[in-house]
Image (tube, rainbow, N blue to C red; front, side, top):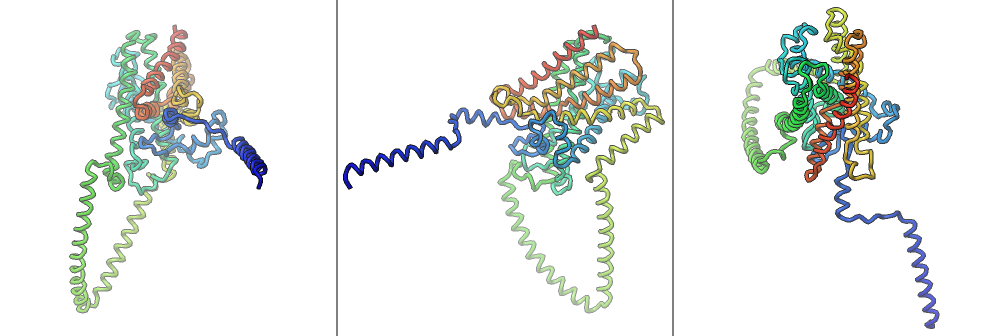
Length: 498
């Protein structure tokens, strides 16, 4: 009770409080104080994998089954087979062959057969529109390169499969209750396999490089036409992407109007309309109940008068039920054939059989090219899908470069170099054997064409322009990719052929 004892108690309490505070600070995790400006920047710098379906509403769904499980394991091929749902690899391989085959077919339909009428002589040659050009012959218009229609169509499809709003289903031209809406493997294969292989950056860049150099071409160097080819290819593909996104909204309004009521401008009117319809439905229900009661009374009178009527009604309902069951079974069989789990493999087997049969029996060079491209196409697509794990995973500590989709940039650079190397070898060895020409053509069209992509490149450009509206990152990424690929390709092609 003395002042001295009270002072000593206070000092002991103070020292124990300091020690406990010291222990708490040591044991607690380190907290970095971030200013509001830095917090905004860090939130803006969060870049997910670009191969994932970029939903502009912020919804995150798509290719994350691969990207999340293979982050930082770029050189481990074992991760191809350690993914949950191994069927996705077969899906991507099948859809990549379909996309590559359609790309070759579109190049023939829009101009390849017009420049080389002696190579192909089948029914497709009669349908050629002579719009595009390779830049090697007397036909002018090399700015409209051979793979431009395929790039436009593939960008349009990837826009349809990349919805702007979370209410839009993954496949907008199907009902939301359709079984394919729940098949995530098919969604990834459509975007990565089909759209990514349908479009190609490598062949587009290779044709522009050959036109700029002018070696072994009739018109010589065509620098201006090649520059227009780069700009037209990018602008039209980007425009097709946005048109595809708007088309997905229109298709959803048509096929699934109950999912996108908030996408309409007249949302208030729709609410009033629903209230009015509810009231009218109530009135109609009360009116229908009165009618049904009257009908029941009349029905009882008729049943009393006719003894055979119940047996006839039972027979008629039984016949209707059996016919309905039969039609439903037939429709289910057709639906399983066209939209089943293994339907892509069925169509792919039929296509490959046609390719091999056309080559061996008909002697069709087009079928020969397609089945050779089908061998190389899945490897390029799977490698591109593998490299997509680098998007948003490289240079995490550098904000200036973290936003760049390095995986897609690397695939386009690699595909461009491989494609221009194949063209270089074919140019300097014009009289080489047929087997060598077929293998190099398969590497160029199948492997390098599917390794590079325009659909994902366009989707990333649109994503960057939407996310960083006050910055020029979308333009830097777009122009930078074209400059890097064209410069490296010129450095590879020109010194060797000259």
